[in-house]
Image (cartoon, rainbow, N blue to C red; front, side, top):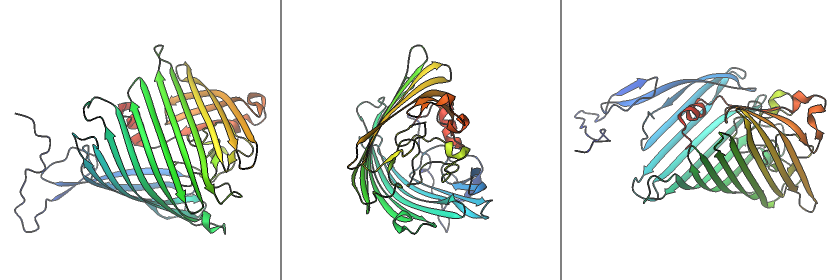
Length: 374
């Protein structure tokens, strides 16, 4: 006999409303076929503008995947004294033996504050189709094609309406081959909107060497297809700190231009850790980020990049330093040593040059310890 993996279809409900009773739990668990489970997960987040934001995440997803899942995250923002949060509806179609093993339909909405008393709304439906080698189920190679539409509305003191109310279509292709020793992921995205069109390519490779040191190489190429906003840098490519106009990054102080929160680093765009004057471009960017393990958590890094504005000469940049990799993608520190601005270690206000990665996403931390990369 073969073990039965799906026991939820073995029940016949003989009642007037023909439905299972609901059961509320605080911790995700294996689904009990006698009940419809709803999970309540208390969570607390923080950013500079919302403040400490306690909330309840209501979801129907336990430990096992299911075709339809929902997640409703409602929070109370202590600074603004109102509600923020997100809604995520997902319908998943799985084909265990086919090449197109997974097709996902998503409908998401989120709202928070991106500056003092200024709120943003993001609504983005998406479709993702994932493929793998159906003849070799041990293979870690996956390819995903995605299509999404981001509609962003921002409250703002700026009179440029196209910066406060815009829609962007995104077409993406993602390739990954990930295991404990080797990590390879590439992505190719095309963004199309009313005011600009651009194409981005990212190559990310990591390798754990025999001496237990890690080597990492990232390459980033971005090119505007057209750009009607040449006098505004909001949608531009950036070397060291992305504008994050899709609001995907988990910034603590998203709009801060000085102070410690402006030093938060999220790998995007050129991926540089050093700050530069005029670090953006309205046309073309080429950058590479290299990391090599020195001893335990200590790594060296090298950033190389080129910016090319339309009808302007190319500009070249470099940056070197030390990376303190305490918890990968969760808590890291970057100490710049040398760049186009000279020997940064000997310059004044060096503490303002140090960059940091910090994340309070518990799922990211759980994936780190469980070695779950996908």
